[in-house]
Structures are given as structure tokens and as C-alpha cells.
Image (tube, rainbow, N blue to C red):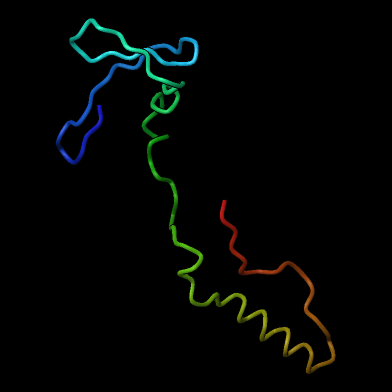
Length: 98
């Protein structure tokens, strides 16, 4: 059942995959239709699979400043003043879209 708020906008019973399609029918009707593609696995999920499990999301372009990079830069500059050279180790503060 697909809803927009509290309004039902669509309701289908999704059946087995057959060939290059998936068998579907409207509840209460005897007509069976073949949807294009394998759509069953898009809807055959547990309740936990439908939840958004992300803690926070944001676009990388929205980041104004990463304080970890700023601290690394300060540590690097402080190390140069003491003759220690470039700080070694894993770079912190980089963001990667997955």
C-alpha cells in the first residue's frame, strides 16, 4: 500500500517474478498483470529495512569548516617551529560520499 500522508494512492499485491517481470494484482480483483522488471525485492523488506539508519546527513558543499583539519594544520605548524617537520599519521577530517 502506497500512501501520501494518510491518503492511500495505490495498493497492489506483488507476486512472484516471472521472466523479465513481476506478477501483480489489485486487491479484490481477479485480473493479474505483469509489471516490467523484478520489483518484488524492492518491497519485500522487514520493518527495520525501511528505516533510515543514518545519524546525520548533509551535502559536502554545506560544510563551512572542519575543525579537525584546522587542528591538524595548527599541529603541523607548531611541529615545524620545533624542528619536528610534517606531522605523520592518518589524515583526519576528509569526507567521502558513499
